[in-house]
Length: 313
Ligand code: UDP
Ligand code: MG
Image (cartoon, rainbow, N blue to C red):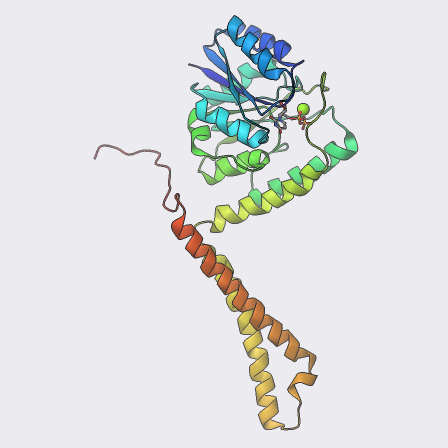
């Protein structure tokens, strides 16, 4: 099978028939073998009934339904588990992403050899103040911090080699960080394609302004876990040592002063409290490091790695 299209959706009943008809047209024009996996993320409208009737008319269209709303990341993750195509393409269900982009996204993987290609909504039809501006800031910071040259990390339209989606797990709200997760998993050929974006035709947006706070927090988590996830002590222990050492130096200094100039009252000096806090914070960091080590030691993936090639030697 050439292509699996994974579509996470939550209350998108009006858009689905149009979206599926459009996808089908593009697929037939290009002669691809394909499947469309519609992941219903616990919709409370008639989305699932619509998916069932679409499936009856076209066997390429498949559906997965969650018991309740778990979020876009969970929906994508489940779609990725089920995908069988050589190339996996994701898109939003709300008709903001155009299926006409599929052939080029497919070619960039198959012909140009990219591991993943992210869409870039260069001209964007969303609210300027709640979305476009904060999104620019988020993308700029993410790009600087991760060294991945993309303009639009959170674009719903992306394509992947099958191997990539089978190697990463998207949980929480990590769908904004997929390029970062892919990079940490060792897939470095990440490309970008300018894509057409449309105004939402039906229904309402599911994300508000809070996404940007969450987006930055997730960026911090993903950076930390990527670097120190398997060796937390190297982070906490380093800073714990530095800070405790500062505290220790302060106390030695104060101790010498006390002995040599007996009149000095140690607790009258502001620096005494800095020393005290440094020792307490330093020890706490060490404890966090030890707890982190205990947790990673028990993690199922503590020794997980991806093998790219293993010759029969
Ligand atoms: N979505 C989902 N689960 C959620 C929220 C959103 O599957 O809990 C889907 C939604 O149906 C859409 C896609 O994720 O297909 C993008 O959501 P939306 O269009 O609301 O985001 P925006 O375009 O406003 O960034
Ligand atoms: Mg949308």
